[in-house]
Amino acid sequence: MWISRPTPDLTIPVPCKALLNNQEQRLHKYMQLVGRRAALWHGDTPQGERKRLLAEPPDLMLTTRESLEVMLVSSKIDHHRFFKNIKVVAGNSRRVVF
Image (tube, rainbow, N blue to C red; front, side, top):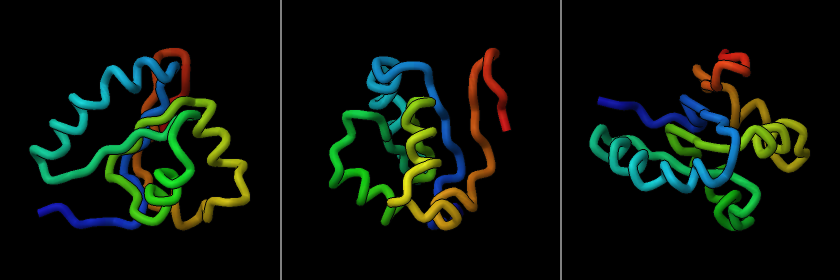
């Protein structure tokens, strides 16, 4: 049984928004199969959706590297609360994976 947490467990920054949009439906389907929730956060994500994601973070968050950087420097995000349970930040061969 999965335990709901107040922050994402996994954040995957990808190189471009088109790739996020291409993977969105597939990842939602796979995450639902295991009772988890995935969400996208990029430059075109509406402000209302961003507020909802901050209030109810998904288990898996897909974002662009630029959007992740904006989240990390934003004064509107409680960084300790939102990022404290992240266990993995996945990247590609040119980026560091934590």
